[in-house]
Length: 412
View 1: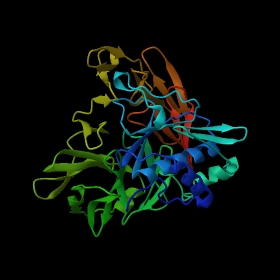
View 2: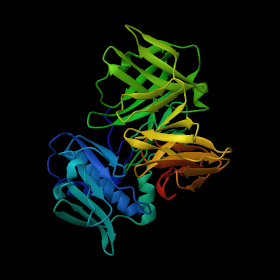
View 3: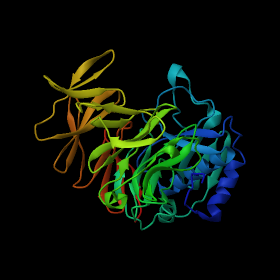
View 4: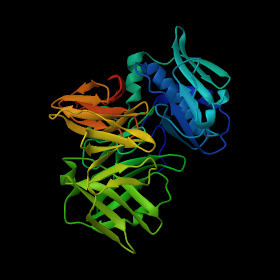
């Protein structure tokens, strides 16, 4: 089953008429898989977000697949076929390595005006009249309305979130700029991730089926992961009542590949070696995704924290972050605070801490409260985001630097 931007969502003929108009002016892409940069500004209207989604679907129609990228913290070289969609007009654009700028003919803007929502796609200009705000809000969560959100997790540096839905075999996938999709798997799910890049667009899950634990791929992918299946003597459905584990990959060699996942609070690996699948406890204590989706960062001793560019751990001076060719940075932490992880604000390291219901971000020079919550709080591994569960049907994605709500996963 191919995964689309509108997987599991039906937005009606009026929406697709807008897509038709936009798609008529979108040039054929150089490659079928399009990277699309999106802003993550707060306080956008649902009317603007619905029309931005129409631009995304039109881009997907012109190519074959879109994968969304947050403009926050982007790096690398200018892709020669990617697009930028901005909710500011004129768009501030993007600057890549070596000073390359996003070309104007591959910039779209979506902003609200007095006479409707104004959309530009390259040189083409449109004014659309989407439904009222509340109706647009309901359309954007079509397909998952009424579904509880359980155990939300950021399993990757990419801008998406996974959670459990109603039953042990149901997974919710929120991707930046796209409606939340609901997937029913062939069996109870133990761990999950999503891979959306210039190669593929797939949901990868570790499920129980026919008395075995196996890797299941939803979407189009050329992978040997399907070889990973072993008999088990435990119930994944029982595990699903307590957790949704991130699924991490270890695929350095074509002949030696596997996955890491959490079960019962412990980390395990299921890997191919040398001609069969083996299930065994992991020898590492820290497991986090690398920036490349098929690698995992590991620490056997469990004494370091990984950030996007910095590493941190306890030293004689206290919590210290280090990075190649940069001075060490000491970050003060009080005795009563639990250190949740290492993140970055700008290009400087910051520790995310929790004391009771209060989640804080600490830098070398100061501290601020990010959120207060008695519920689940998850840190993103690349972006300065935390996901805070506010109710059984609402998760807020909050900017660590400001405490502002950037995105909501709302199924009420």
